[in-house]
Image (cartoon, rainbow, N blue to C red; front, side, top):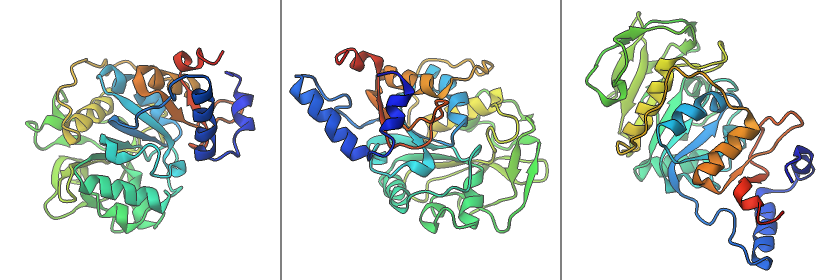
Length: 301
């Protein structure tokens, strides 16, 4: 069951067909379905790499996370974003791949109903290039007028009292990339670059709280700085009203998690199942195949 070739053989099976098969097996065996609920605190849309770097600080912070695989393979239906406090959309390592229009609409509807959203640098570029639609672009507190980017800016805090910036220094730099963007009317710019470009911007105009982090994540350096790890955690607490999360992450711990262990790790924190498609190296490609937690699979062995 744990041999990845098993999952490769199922790669052409749709997620709904496979779920039906698994639910049928569970029913005939007198077991509960592996994913009886579709709800939680944070829905994570990965970019194919950053999720491995962010998994530990997010979970150490106490978030209940459901992993939907890479953003460009998510259909917007499973998991359903409207059942979560917040969605974290990583668009950094792999960018420009687009998102299912239905998935973009699902995000827009969920934010309109009050769900929080944290998105990262390349989403503004993707809206500009029309690989993400205006439906998604309208959710963002920033926009990119023309394609320009930079690297290694200084992050200068403008509002140290804001909860997103709790525990962060007044300025820092980590060598990653950023886009030259502008804030929309009514948006609050919390951090700027040395030249005034918005680096952390928030608003609630679409309904729920939305935060844009102008950071290319793992695109250049292959890792996340302590400041960005803390920003991710603080931003999720803010947009999802998750201030009750009590555990403290070690933001200086740069340990990464490989893709297969990441899926199991997320599932064993209470998620039940997670959709993913594995190539021969175990890389998460798209949410076409369901993987199940070791605890649940013990019922089948």
